[in-house]
Length: 380
Image (cartoon, rainbow, N blue to C red; front, side, top):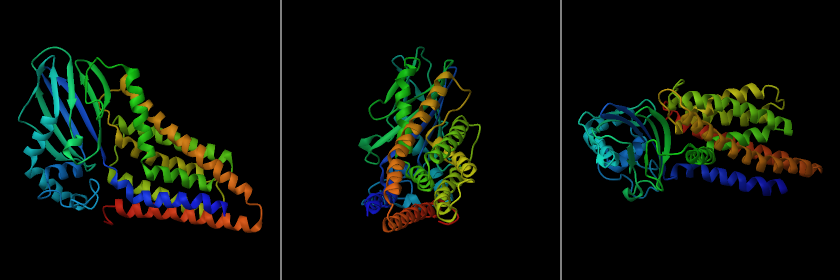
């Protein structure tokens, strides 16, 4: 019964959180800035569903006023790719105008003006990519301010904007959010950015329920502390490699391939726990899946151009945040599982332990399969 007392709330929270994950009203925006003489080129990546709901791209106002979050129950989440492209083409001027008004650049006290050659397209990742050109004839440091998807728009409650820049010979990146909406190139300190990227990495894993379930599936199959150390190390090394390579653009795999495979990795590990008591094959499997999860983590970051000390520090900080949450999950979950296994010495308790472990594993596998179907463009 101790096992049920431990596992029942855990499984209930996971199953309830699975559909609720889509209700998190938060989004991420990526901005890349490059100076070219008196001009600054900006490339902005935003979520299609958020933009569609804000600007009514798919016809009319919010198609489902009762939905609690972007993409939940509204028509945008089910719009085919070709329809999205046609909608963007029809509303390209509105999209460019909105982003041009919300992404403000200025040198000294002179506001940079947007030019009329904006390009709006749907990227392979499914995000809307908008290329803007700013005329900045004044001299002095460049100040960037973004109000893209602010709270008063009524669409999201939180927006994190990652700005990568190559301005006047200075390269780096910074994070902006509702508490900090602007920065001046060259005036930021590296140490002030590190905590922001650590937090971003921690939040990305903590609120990425698929990554959490993958870790729990690994823990359910681990018998000894050595097993945990080995699989955690393999997973960490693998996802760190692809995280960096994908973030700097050296490796690129479309999200419609990565996300379904991440979901499938959860189901595979969970089922493997049930049908294969031996774990000798687990390390290469975990390493391979770790490479996939690293590509998923990189979805929150985008670094263009050559690496600098600043961008490298940001990537390392982001990965540190991921590892801190990963260690916290392992440190909380595995000792509890180990205690229950050692406490279940009586035959009845051992039987209950086995049944509870099987039930939890099946629940994790089921969540992975559901996500696989939901994320597969061929199956939906």
